[in-house]
Image (cartoon, rainbow, N blue to C red; front, side):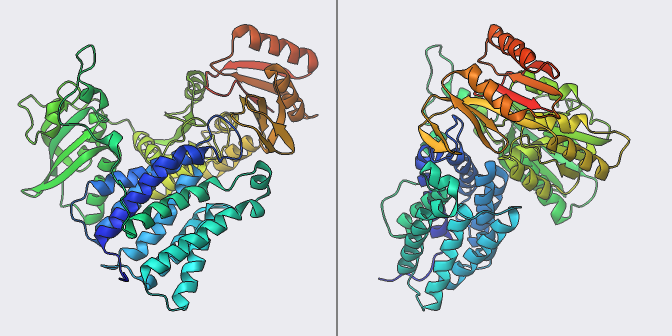
Length: 556
């Protein structure tokens, strides 16, 4: 029996199955990363992106097509991590924008949605490359259009052929991107997209697929660990239940109300906004009650404030009634609005302290080992009370998420300085001039970042060949701005060879940011050797404390 349409319930199940299939395959996708570094995270980033949408969709009861599409789109946009995650979120955004206008989807509508999906994703990427997830997504649309023109209306035939063709396109990605061919892998982002599509197809074809995510489910019975402490309390993501009533200054326009709801959803879960006698009653589980109350104050006076610690009293998680308690005061007064603010992505206590010392208002923990999401960026933006906020991603895989946060922010001027490394971020901040305009500072900071060469020393997690260098598992690698600079079995030798490739006649300072796994005697010996080798160049040591990367080196 042919099936010609997909309704909202089936689309929701297909999406959830795709998300679950991606989650199951994430480790395999991580291993497809071209660079054999220990933090290869395409699979992780794509999974966390789509699971953000899964969570939002899973909270809906009997949603129509518009509600399904909105949950999928907004959840993935806010949860997007890394370039692959951002591109996936844009593919979803483009598809759902078309699909949301219909009660059921047929071949014509799905093909139009695929067309818009590809166009939206390509538009989001500054310099699109073929041989990537974009190429695979284009293959999906190309085959969909071909089948539509051929008059195919049965969705089983249509979807199976589209996905089979996209699999073929994925296998051809190494022919389009030489670095993939040399490493002997297909594009990891493209593979991630195919896992989503295959999971969705399985549900459509009626296969028995588990679309539940078990780690997020808590049993009804409260389990105890050996110390008798509630494991449920340990697993609670958001520690406080906050309830209050906003006595509105004036009637809210739709956009303002939606902006407030979006903020609440980004700050926690179990969000309820209920009109009450012309005012609004708010319920949310969050980790920052003070920030929630401060945002509420922008809309009016607060009344009936209640804050419960869910980890001390997990039973209150499901309670709809606030406990009798005096209303606490807001944690702190909003800071005075200033002209400029700074957000830096950093990992390692030493690195974060450096950014704070040169003026960063907020540090987002993340970087090579964990790419922060668009939502993380938006939360940080909300904490900085400034007219113009500069974001320093300090990683090429975080720039797109920062740009997406910028595009989703309406009440502040967000400027993303596209720093690809921590040293570039530090140089950019040093080049900021308080008395200069936003435009001049953007140019100066960008130029300062571009004048820094960066090298990073880590180890290989698998055998491969890249940049014409044969790499064996557990080799040390010196990775420069444009590729592998040195490889070997001795860490200091690899570091010195990497620096030799970076130093030129214009170099005046070598700065070494020391990782958490390097002993003092080792980095002091390295410093001494470098000073002997480069007598006219200043050598500085900074304790970065970053994991995985033994040394991060800048040459200016």
